[in-house]
Image (cartoon, rainbow, N blue to C red; front, side, top):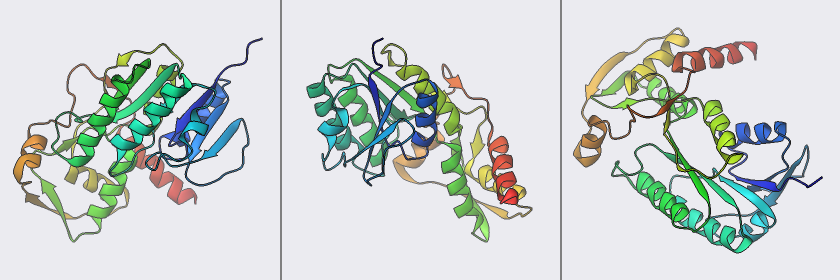
Length: 260
């Protein structure tokens, strides 16, 4: 019986990776995780210490790997980190490179989005078989933003700025499906089932906590504000749509807090 090639997951200990790795293990695959902090192997998961941005440990991470799920990301440098990974994957003869990007990567005039777009291009132009999925912001990020906004005496309500947050577990399931399938290039975006203003997200969080705040309408200035008001961070047609809503996610979070 032929052994199944190891699958490398970058960012395997993060929000998304923590869902992806168990799903790959349940599917019977050996998983390697590239991480900046050393960890002992266990439960079919091997950890390789390295840093993509510094290009440290990259070759060791991809050695003998058939598929790479590139989930690692940060506030800046995703383009350079991805280029380092691509070069190592080319040398190793990786057969499938799967990348998670963000909706609006080609439309929002912010450095984070531009780096994501450059990373997408590095993957697509690598000569390797590839798949890229763009997803909306995760509920986990929406929760972080909502918590910050809820600390203010008045909740700012940027006019025309909408999110369509998606559950990270649904993104993870889709990525695993893509990774175990044939390379598919750019696949349909994945969004959450509902649109929310940022103030709505904060108010939903406050309501779940039994609290409330007044809203203060504000206007985002410049090119970024115009892009968001035009919905450039959204995919309203042709996307795959998740099922779990922001309200579902909040109910789970509140239930977990009470149980603790």
